[in-house]
Length: 480
Image 1 (cartoon, rainbow, N blue to C red):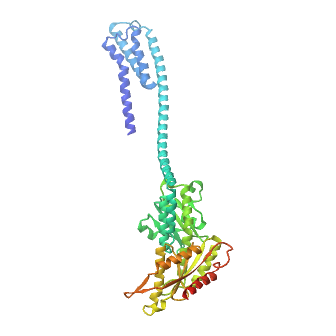
Image 2 (cartoon, rainbow, N blue to C red):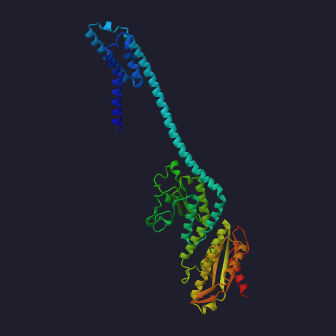
Image 3 (tube, rainbow, N blue to C red):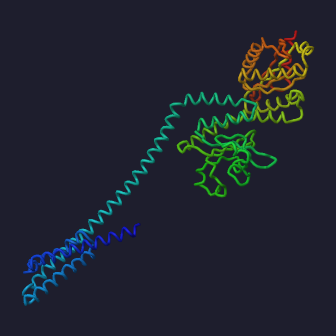
């Protein structure tokens, strides 16, 4: 297309120059040679060159001038031959001065035209550069407006965000790992605008990472998804316990060997100082990618770590052999070991651990009317009712007798545990156990004890034995 257009332009220029160069000769033919007669009459031929030089490049203008002069010379010779005149009598030598003047004017016109074209080209290039710069500035302004809007929303809704974050984190207090991870991803999406992301955990049998929870994934992708520990960004983050951000690709060639198309931000999930899994964000709005988002993710993972730790420890307890075959809940031996571990952790990390023993005092009377195993399961139904109503997730264990279960509750001081027990008694005061279409009242007593995790704290509640002894003492007092 470009070559055809150039060829068309060349033809048009050739025709125009041919017509302009022939105008003096045509006028001369029409006037019977008067244009050439005398020296000043040759001026149209002399002016052909500068006029052509104004509108066309010098070389085509020069060829046009030569054509015009050749036509004039041919006409002059023809007129002289017809009239029997000498060429110098018909066209004096002074006419050459006019042609020389035309040549000088043509040179000046060509120089002026060339400078105008150079300046025009310069201004056009500056205009194009200014347009490109304007387009870039408009794009930058749009991006900055989006970023500004995000920052303005952050500032204006900071108070609401803190409240929302508190409510979201409380939802993590579930002993269901799938539910907790799903809540964590939903919270991350809410605070960062994440569109696609997932949490990976280690599959020890396959020695690779598999999805534990996903957000924004097509359902069919999850079935076959996995990440190699040695050949993926997720594996690198898991092994080294270091975060990955896509900006690192510009600063280092360390990640060039990995496929990073699905990695914008990747964070290790550390539990008890060991890598448990990896949080990866695949798709994130451009304006949300910032250090601020990285800080938010670090805060969310830090807040989620204690809850995930409790869930995983509880799952590990349930995966052990000391479980009751009827209810599936851990036995007293696991309670004692778990209590010691929690107290040891509380001494170094702070916080508190509360032991609550629930006892049904009319258990034997109910056992005469209802299957004993059904009654034992009923105790843990009470636990689920408490969790649902109080919105505080507890760890449940069998205690020493069939009519007793133990609950471990975290984050309550002595007064908080006392009020918690009073609320539970009020909640279950009118509770009736239903079996075979009959309702049976349940008489319940509670014993509790609390230990803070301050390092060096002594006295009651500082050891597992003292916690158990205090809770049992409260139970014995209520039996009297």
